[in-house]
Image (cartoon, rainbow, N blue to C red; front, top):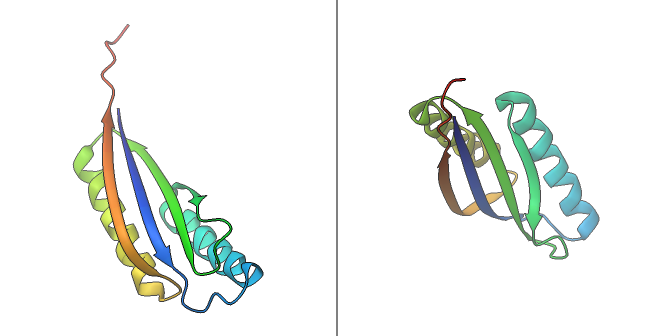
Length: 100
């Protein structure tokens, strides 16, 4: 089993209030969750108007597939033009279980 974890630092250019920021982030997370079937959450910068951090997780059997899916997901987020991706980090966790 392979777990892919993606951490994104984002800027919300049109964020003029926390309420406006939350609407943008909620829309982004819903669209990403529905399209890519991933787990996604705001994990930092909750009190900032124009900055946030998002964590995304995807589980599967093939590291290449997970890496490709997370790359496509980042491209999708950048293509929405709701936010600007300042930094993205992807890490993988490998779990090997012996069959019982």
